[in-house]
Image 1 (tube, rainbow, N blue to C red):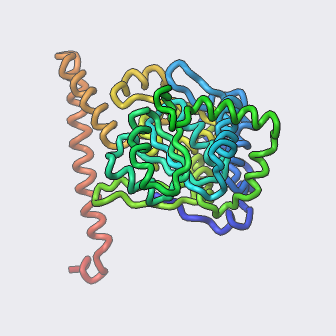
Image 2 (spheres, helix red, strand yellow; image 1 turned 90 degrees about the horizontal axis):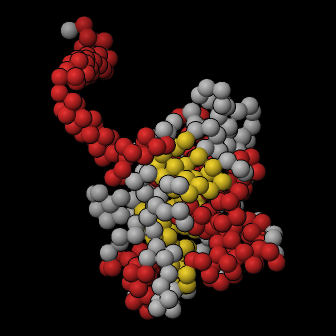
Image 3 (cartoon, rainbow, N blue to C red; image 1 turned 90 degrees about the vertical axis):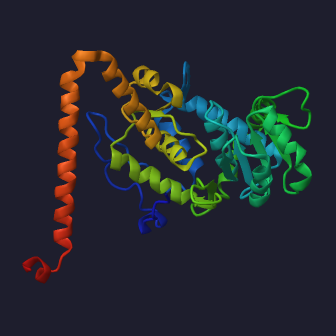
Length: 356
């Protein structure tokens, strides 16, 4: 889904006025969208919410300041070691892990275009993906995936570097992520304003990411998203769903998917804390995090529904009142849907048809 672009955003009118109200005592901040790029919007969040938890993976938490420092070091490393320029494509093939969000933000820091994709991509599809977007850097999560990219490097004329998150000393052609980060930190120490200068070259309508559709009805297709597209969502969604800086967002969707990415950037845009969950441990993660916001797709809700029904079956006689309540609710919903359908059909009739 690509949100429409309001005319006032192009004129710098976004973010004007008083912040919208949220749930309870915490106000919902209106995310400023006239900052021009996702990196500058993220920097604003760091200034506002620096010591708060930005993202949490199990027992590992990163504050907004720590997330910014990590992402900035990786961005500087991509510029210095990989010679990434504004507008070039950087592919990110990894699942949900602590390094994903810093890497995603790092690509935005360089002014390049991020191309996230699922790490389980078949070998035949991998070549077409990297060659189709003309990726100059491929960041992969495992040595196995790095070997697959290196094996077809001759077919990828634009590719300059392969960066691997989980390095293997035997894989000399791939650059370890730790080396990229350490070099980037040294470069930022010598030139603290390098990323700020790079952002001068990024406009609001510049390309920010290339997302591939799910391909449920055919071959996945590329969708180009600008900074303005994504900043518009950061502005509108917090007010629409009532999420603010005191909220805990539990995310079990893959970050390479548009929905998961949208929620992640929404959370860091309004100061919320983003907690990552496993699809296979949803119940434990729900109890552990106690989220105030839990976006998910239908298979997650179906899994939770099945677990609830299994728990009812195991509880025996004690669950009879709840089963009765569920049956009454289902009957009420069916009757309501039927009545709503008849009312809608009647509303669509012409006055002459109603009279007849």
